[in-house]
Picture 1 (spheres, rainbow, N blue to C red):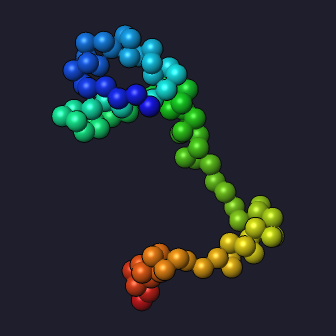
Picture 2 (cartoon, rainbow, N blue to C red):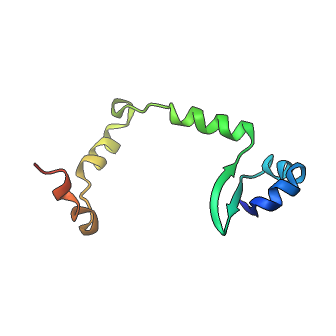
Length: 85
């Protein structure tokens, strides 16, 4: 990903639009990210990915068993109080 200042994007929009066709571009304002510009094909790919639904019933039994046997790390276990009633 390339980074450009917002003022540079305003001045060189056409050239930066060409960069976006091959990789995302992060637009910064005052040194902080403000937006990411994506090619339309990449945007559509991400939208399709968001809508993909997975079912545990389609996983192989060995993988389901491995997931069920997994224990949280000590760092993750520190958040158990947030879900315990």
